[in-house]
Amino acid sequence: MHHAHYAAHDSLYLIFRFEDLKQLLDLQQSATRIDFVIRAGNTERDMLLLRDTVQITASHKVQGEGSLEVPVKIPANHVTAGNSMQVRLWLKLAGQERLGTSHRLYLNPEMLQKDYLMVRANSGRPVFRGFATTADKLVLWRSNDTTAQPLPIRLFNPAFQPALPPMSAKQEPAPASQLPVADTIRLQTGDTIRLQQEGLYLFGADMPGQSGLLVQEGAYPLVTRVQDLIPPLIYLTTSAERETLYSAKNQKIAVDNFWMRVAKDKSLARELIRTYYTRVENANRLYTSYKPGWATDRGMIYIVYGKPNNISVSGDSETWIYRESEATPYVKFVFTKKENNFTENHFELIRNREYEEHWYSTVAKWRAGITNL
Image 1: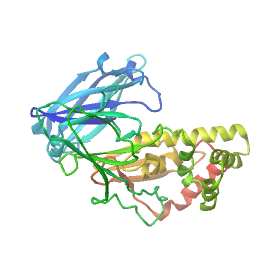
Image 2: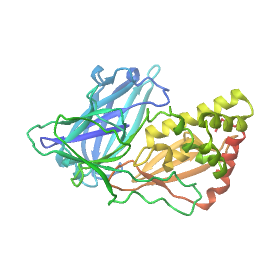
Image 3: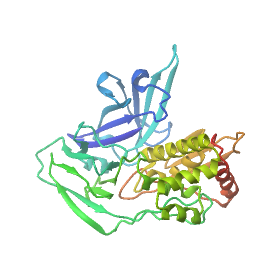
Image 4: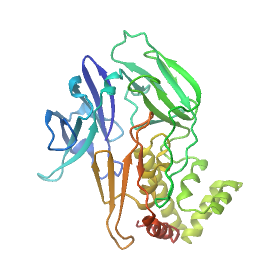
């Protein structure tokens, strides 16, 4: 689930987007309703403030994408620090079986200061997931057009580092609040813009309710360019191997040769490439923060280990569990949310030296051509 929001007329308007990246279920056919509750805290024991239901209709189905976008309106007086909103999407399976998927959103008063959405010019739908490409045309939309205040946008070009291994003793610092500003733009309501420079854009700079957008070239989150193939290989390669890849006259051939050396078989090499870069693309969709999803801590673990068997959320932390299997022993990773000015989607892994053996063993399996990880 992703969400966009804006405030107007003493209410907070939320648009929830549901999609199934694995395409295991047809959401548009199986979704029946969403239930949501707001509590004065983040547990089932906290006081219930609001309960409501929205029935899924044809208007919520995004044509050609298989996803759902469901608008919800809640009173502004419930949007206070400490309150949380639990959203449950109900799906109808075979026969009478039902499946409910739960998601949690933490509410804060700064959400009420945001009176705009950035929407896509070709569809009018909000920009979800915190990223766009340099080819996208965006429009500044406001529910109340009487304001004459332009929206300030700042461009930053932070140098980001790929995630460090899970046993590293260091933690990458989040982007500083005072980065050098590369450019400043001001938009009026209804203006259309293409953000033609790669970088990190801060909308509503110096205003409450500011939000960030990572802009990338190409078809991001997809991996379609040769220059995008090498950076995510940092988790499997040595520094000497990466130097060889980057210095190659034909980088595409160099990358193919790397996978052929790993697989020693053309068919297996294709399977490894498909598996690895599908995970890179999914990591980009799910975990993009102030840097590409593949370079985040959650992206690194997802790419190398695959989809967790279980994810539990408690407060500002996520716990990923990989159960023991023939390919890999049991392992647990805990990520904590880190606040910054640009995104609510940045989580850092709690690193531990005890991961070292497990990490190198899993990487070795990749380099031995084992794909069932």
